[in-house]
Image (cartoon, rainbow, N blue to C red; front, side):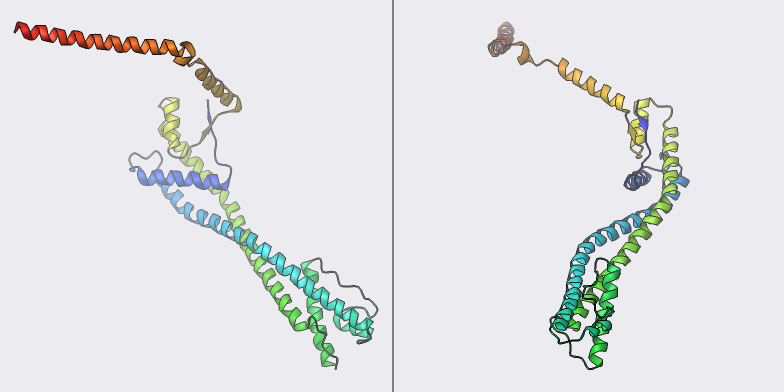
Length: 284
């Protein structure tokens, strides 16, 4: 015998509530299988719950789409920042700048290593050092570094900061909706449980199969246990196997012979009826 199973996902919860609400609209109050107070509770709860789920989905989709865009912008920012530090080292190697110029950018005077840019935090730190350091060095009388200039790097750096900020806003929105849904979940389960209990109680005196059929219209879900599903499958297969096609018993020639006999019998019957009619007519 199938057993009742309450929804265990948020989508299933929303579907169960929608089905019960639809029944509340379509069925007159005096025929409704659950109380009007339960219907009102469900109506009050459903809209904010659905809105939170829509907000969560929308934010998550946007977050996923913007994540790819952020990856591209991040790679560009890393490329321009690291390239600038490489050009700085080349200028020092050529003697165009002194090693002490590295201090403007937060580097040690004799450290020619390119800064580690493998995290957002490092990109922000070294990007800011680069822009401020180049401005200070030029203000002290130095010539601007080119290919790329700090102005070009600044454009990529600010695009990166903006993309990171927007991604965090989306993430915050997604987390907010997720937390709200989590907090509403217990209430959703309680409302659904109350609806289903009232529905089953209304149809309690009906035969089991009819009771389940009527309750299902209110969103009550019944599932078979694994061994019951196997038994149903076996019964279905047995019925199919027990069904005998006439072509499995008779040959094609025999079938045609039977059909001819049937047609002849019908024709003979029709002739007899006409003959009886003629005899009756002649007597009159």
